Length: 237
Image 1: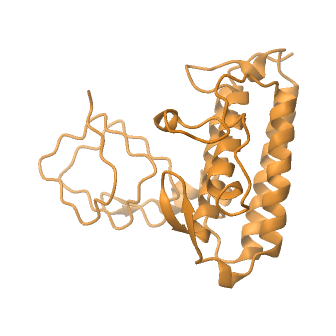
Image 2 (image 1 turned 120 degrees about the vertical axis):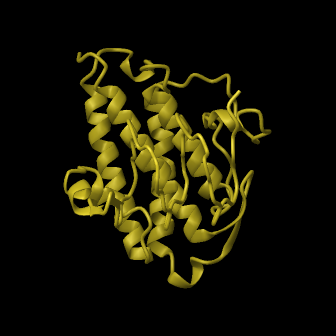
Image 3 (image 1 turned 135 degrees about the vertical axis):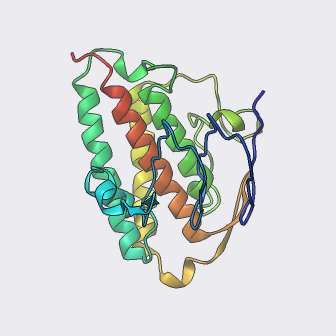
């Protein structure tokens, strides 16, 4: 069974370590230095800001060829106005994805590709993520029953969730729309003075409000990418 490492490994040093086939997810590699290493068949999917490979700064090349780069740069905005702009962009991208789903064969939204979540399950997870990081701790409302936690959190006692549910796409979209509107209204009224307010998030503990907002953005961004990737594998109507 592979080992799992979580928590603060800042300033750690790895000497002679075998990291082959290792997975780094949701990690901060700012200032990382890798030398005397084999970097073979490695995939990096990240916001790239000054990446130097074998003495060559490849940052501009990578970002120029990354169609997601403009949206990536919006995920950690500084001001409430920029946060609202980020949310508007994410909503537009998801609307385009919904139109793609409408053009697929019947049942496609409930179809898993390569063992990943179906489109409906992805949206249910985003309902859960919104509730965990905003609806419950910030808006002081409850979890919607259709929310779907990530695998590592399934066994936690999330109040109000019903994991036996199998809701249709239109119901999930309606819940998403209600959550999105509440989040949008909150961002529209948000002030800069509030961004560092401490929020107690279930399972994850205290976080500044800005980090809660960033987490919502990041969840929406990454699952948008996963959904677009998987939808390409499904047949058209």
